[in-house]
Image 1 (cartoon, rainbow, N blue to C red):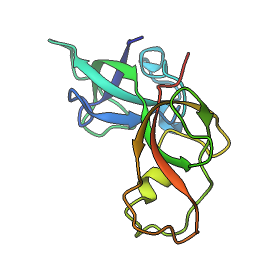
Image 2: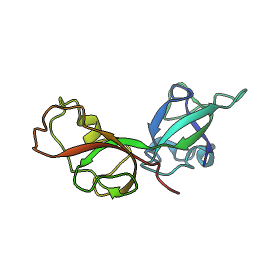
Image 3: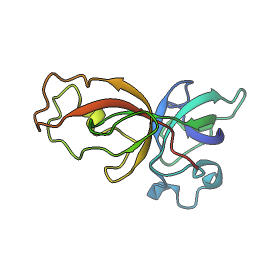
Image 4: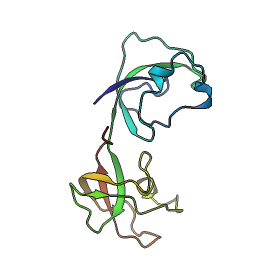
Length: 149
């Protein structure tokens, strides 16, 4: 389900994805709080539409201001333990990985998913992008569905 919110003008582009991190200290006392702080913290969103004719409003967090957009929660591509990973099942991430140079790192620690969070797998994508897991994990690349409200 889509929501109308305010985002920084640099993010206000159709297709842009972001993880909502919640209120920043600079939000205190802002007259636009109710329009900005209306998403679920930790959820990944995609900008579906930039509101035509919307004003750019001053913001203490975004130096170029904020504007109105329509956003929807989106799924997340991730590596999960291969055992029992199939479409329709629930899975969680294998755990942190210190190997940031690995081509799979962004899928082992994807933005918008917590390590202790079970998420429903909507699609099996196949083998991860790496040739060998430096932590000796057997992983499968999957698509988690969007976080449910």
